[in-house]
Amino acid sequence: MTNLSLLMLLLSLSLSVALAADISALQDFCVADPKGQVLVNGLACKDPKLVEANDFLFSGLHIAGNTTNPVGSKVTPVFATQLPGLNTLGISMARIDYAPWGTNPPHTHPRATEVLTVLEGTLEVGFVTSNPENRHFRKVLQKGDVFVFPTGLVHYQRNVGYGNAVAIAALSSQNPGVITIGNAVFGSTPDIDSDVLVKAFHLDKTIVNHLQSKF
Image (cartoon, rainbow, N blue to C red; front, side, top):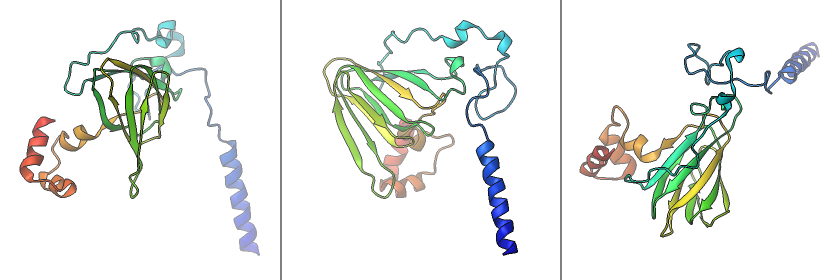
């Protein structure tokens, strides 16, 4: 009984400490300081006395991105690095422009859920669940449609219309991160050994080498 009583006491103390922790913001804002020398999980805070209105402003999201590139799309991010006032607020956004049949290639956001809203055009979107099911959820979206991509899952968009398309993405992190699958696998620095990729993708080594040369 003594050991049981001691265990219960320790458990109650640990719970009280956990419940006492304040997980909400402890200040009004933490504007990112790009010159900050402190290494933290995120961006260091700017001196509040030096913060100004422009730290909470981003201009230019009305400007179409240049989609003249091999994938036919352009992402214009509004993360904490572009809008310092977003730092620590756990939210960000991006504009995505798509040329006709342009694609935002398969990628993941390791730190954020994404909510995509179509402003113009018609987009095919989809995501794939984790192993072992690897279920592919796919939908064709029209103007005004909203689709959610869960945190960390591989997803993509493709313009299936004959005109330009535009979407706005809202993300649940000020720094969601992005890992484009093709770039990560075939364009890493240094290269992943081709023998690894041959076995992983069941491809001939010459094809792997060719793909690596493309990225």
